[in-house]
Image (cartoon, rainbow, N blue to C red; front, side, top):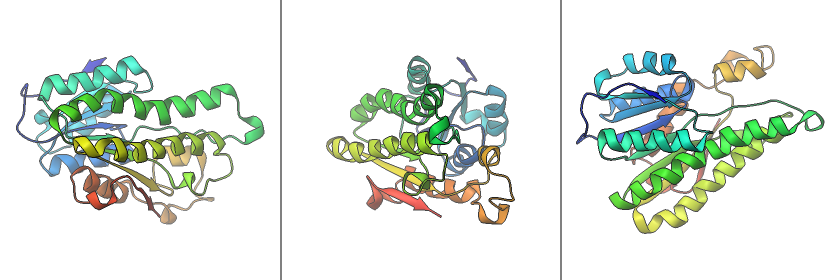
Length: 242
């Protein structure tokens, strides 16, 4: 696991860990959290992309880039441990890493299912499992999962993708129940089409025009509002964004 060094070992500012922070919604959320005074740990598979985002953030030296595949339990746990060691706390977990295989039911293979569920389901569960004892010790914490409107209204070809995200939506409902006693709140943000590389790998502009897609920043603003405590009334809810 490759990581950059933060400017200090502990911090008095709030701390957020953002997965999928190298691009799209994750990158936009990381920048917005930095603007709100958070120290941010950017987690993703591509260290060069994480570093490019970190360099564009407010006070780059306050933040940390960690190269890790969160679909691998060991790497996911290591990433959360690294953040706890570097900053001494963790206030928000923003889980934006994802994959979107577009495959019809009859063409779905075991490999398709494994890709979707390891990244979209286990890749969200693993950071939560490791962060939970930290939240319990602090008596506080917020988890925001970037899901999809496809859990409510899937496109054709999203048999595996929508199901894997639906499981992540369920995590949010469970965290509301079990988090009540320890001050943890959780949210699922379920956007429609968002203008990202992942969208364009599945849909050309002839199918989803750019004018009909959401900007990553529009979704990230809702993610950050939940992470920062501005929308605690939505604790445990799926929040559609269309």
